[in-house]
Image (cartoon, rainbow, N blue to C red; front, side, top):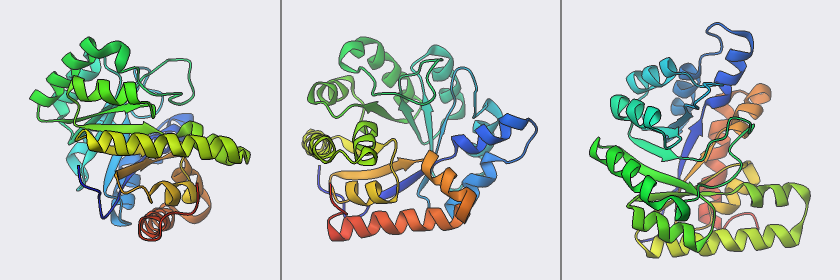
Length: 255
C-alpha cells in the first residue's frame, strides 16, 4: 500500500461520557463534544461501547450515528452482543479491541494470532453489514500477519508502551519501541493493510508518529479531553491536527 500524504485524526469522546456518568444526568454530552471536535477539524469520532457501559452507553452510539457528519468508529469487544449492536447501528468502522472488566483502559493489543478462527467469524459478520473492520494489535509481525489472514483491512497499532517510555524519560526503551512501531507499520502496509495507531498519544508523540508515512490515522481521546479542561476542546483538537500535520511534513519531533 502506498504511503499516505496526509494523516487523519480520530477523536475518542469516551471520557466526556466518563465525566457525565460520574454525576449522572445528561451533562456533559459526548455527542456535543463530537460535534465540536468535528467543527474543529476531526476527521472522525471514536466511541467504545464497553460491556459494562462504564462511559459510552447505547443511546450515545445511536445519537452519534444519527447526528455526526464524519465517520463513526465503533470500538468493541468481539462478543455476540457487540456484533449485534454494530450490525444494527452500522457505523462506518468497527475497531475490535480486547476488553477486561477490571482494567481502567485497554491494556494491550488483541491476540489476533491466538484467536484467528473466532475473529474471522466476527470480521466476516461486520463486513457483511458494510462495516470496515480494524484490529487493535501490538506492533508484532505475528499479529499483523494474523490480521491479514483474518481478513481485516485495517490494523490499529497499540502505542501505549512507547508513550509510557517517552513519559518516563527512558530514551533507550522509547527508541526501541518506536523502531518496533515503524517496522510494523511498514510491514503491515507492504501486506496491503491500512495502518492506524493510538493509545497514550499527546501533542509531541502524535507529531512524532505522524512522521511515519504508512500511518493513515491516529485515534486520540484521553489526552485531548484532559487538555480540553484547560484550553477548550475546539482549541486542543485544532492544535493536535496542526501538530500531526507538522509531523507529517517535517519528519516528526524525534523518536
